[in-house]
Length: 383
Image (spheres, rainbow, N blue to C red):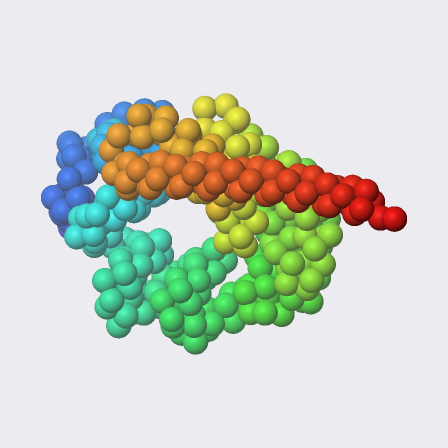
């Protein structure tokens, strides 16, 4: 009997191994992970993390093809093992595929990951995004429901579900996820910051202010950093407290003075508010950081801000160098021609203005001279 139990145990173990190998093989076939299904070899985690970092930097620069290649190299280090790291890299690769104009490949990655782990919330979330972009709201909502189901206490997914649906004109569908997120329990800084932001999204700015002020106080005490200051600045704006908003925007920017990604985000937010001088300053600060991974986006942002400030000459000069550095950006090349035209028109208008001012000054001088001559002749003719 004991022998039979041992035989059954060995058989079940073998079946489980075979099932996992089939799952891995299917994932490898679908997304081209390049796994070598030869058992559990030595992990190359450091190499995987290094390639992953290169991929993330390429994403920030907008070079999605390079990002895909490096995420693949990171996955190749797994040698048949799938951990949370590999699943996370798969999601980054799927996002890079989508941004590179390859939605079908992105969907294939998500499908493969969910074949392996049917409770992986991020894969449902990303696949739901892809369906939403394709206009298939039914599939998108189904995947979003699964993402929320397996998200546990991940506030970020709930918030992103709402924001995506709101942008798609499905605000009512999204609001339920905010309400679900408010039911999550927790008292720490991160919980306070996220709940505060949820209240902000729901338009309850007083509650948002209360939660976020507590989060910021804890943040300053612990020396930790999150987006509480940014959310509090946005909330203060909604409450009409511009002084407080400016204070916390500046604090957030100072805390991330060496983070070009955050400075780009602040620049983009300022652009949306038509605060073009502030936006330009954020982009320029980002460009001054050490080796900004998003240099191209920062430079485009700076040029756009200068255009909105009617600084066409500066924008043209910066765009001239930009198109040399990034010749693949065809839109920028077209905009450069437009800027050259605008600059020429602006120069012509400035010249015409000067000529008009000079003519007016000459006419005024002539009128004054004639007036003096008339007065003099009248005095001479007087008895």
